[in-house]
Amino acid sequence: MPKAVVAMLKHETNTFSPVPTPLSRFGPNGPYYDDAAADAMRGTNTAMGAYLDLCTEAGFEIDTPLAADARPSGPLPVDVYEHFVERICAAVRRGCDALFLDLHGAMVAENTQDAEGTLLERLRAIRPDLPIAVSLDMHANVTEKMVRNCTVIAGYRTYPHVDIRQTGIRAGTLLLRALKGEIRPVMAFGNIPAMMHTLCMDTQAEPFRGFIQKCRDVEGGGVLDASFFGGFSISDIPAPCGSAVCVTDGDTDLARHIVDDVLQLAWERRADCVYKAEPLAQSIARAKAAEAGPVLLIDHADNCASGGTQDTMAVLEEAIRQGLSDIAVFAICDPEAVETLIQAGVGNTVTLPLGGKMDVPAIGMQGRSMVLTGKVKAVTDGTFTARGPMLTGVRASMGRTVVFETNAADIVVCERNHEPWDLGCLRSVGIEPTHKRYILLKSRMHYRAGFLPLAKAIIECQGVGVTASDYGLFNYKRLRRPVYPLDSDARWAPAHALAGNDVGPC
Image 1: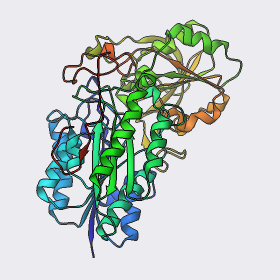
Image 2 (image 1 turned 90 degrees about the vertical axis):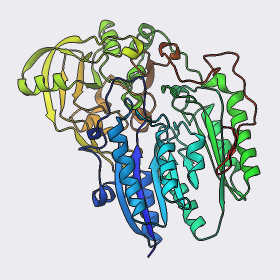
Image 3 (image 1 turned 90 degrees about the horizontal axis):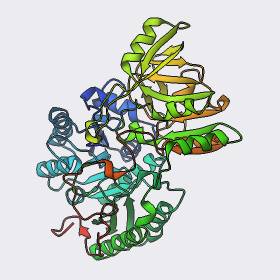
């Protein structure tokens, strides 16, 4: 019986984030190992879930050494990164016929700026001929090292990411076809010196709808798969920029041509990938004037799914200052406040400093709490299973979670960072979002997966935090310059594609 190794290792690293990344962050109670990894991921809207189904149907014996996925935060400590790498490498050393990896593509560790590339390079050193399939997030900072050291790559085509499982099917099916001798995959890769703002990456709107559609349009015949990656720009590495990968059936020149065509379109539309925020007071005033709710207030500068602390209070402060009420807030990550509120007990009134517990030295920001008085409305263990279109079936954990009811807002206060990509984040703690006038969400785009259908209006609010859209706030030291939009003289020509196993420029 053929044997496959199937593993997940995902982290989007914000190198400016003060939020630490311990081993315990990778899962509800830490990472899943061995049989527990398979049990947790099987049947879920994840690439690993897709791989497990594909390999089972193909008759493989399956080894699942690891399923580890953490909310974005600062760089991985060396021991945490090496622990993960060794788990996967050890499984390959035990012997296998194929490797299926569910990765992010924007992970940074203290000992490597290209954590996925380094992982794949080490795996190649163990088994130079091992067929390897890789699925990547649409925000991957793809590198030559990643492409050089695997067989096929496929990237998400939706943001919010509702096609994660489908991406695993794309990558996994290509590898299975290669194992049968039906195709001979080769890849090309290229990137452009353009940092793209996350808030411009909605794949249901231009320009990203056009980038993704171009990738779909070129497929067929010898073109097996094409992916465009917006990159993750809040990472101080050489090229946190837009990139493309194309997989063809043995035709490297065709793959390079496709990559250049996709990147040419992205370069021509680079100005459309720059987000321009309005003043916070103006955003809240627009929300106040909205005729009906729920109105979504999107606190995108403090998005924990991009490495934010999830404890800045600027947007809530301004909303209360302007007289907004009947607000649901998800969420303030403040373990100290959670403990205080639990000790007070449900039904009791508490006055406490909420949020603002973390400084952000990278942008010169000091934490500033907001003193609030309210009642402890509910206490839960903070767990729920996602039922919406994103990460369906995945068990989520917010840590111990409290609903703190003030005159203006029901505030969810949690111990662990968690982004509101599923309505369960509110319903699991007893808040019905459709009954609220305003819903303040610390998110950038993933909220759309769960909350877009019920929103009467969406107001993007530029608060404060380490996921702000102003690149000028960040002191980049490793970034390769010139790069757009920081440098108006940045230039690009379609000559940077790289075949998967050829030596050449990136």
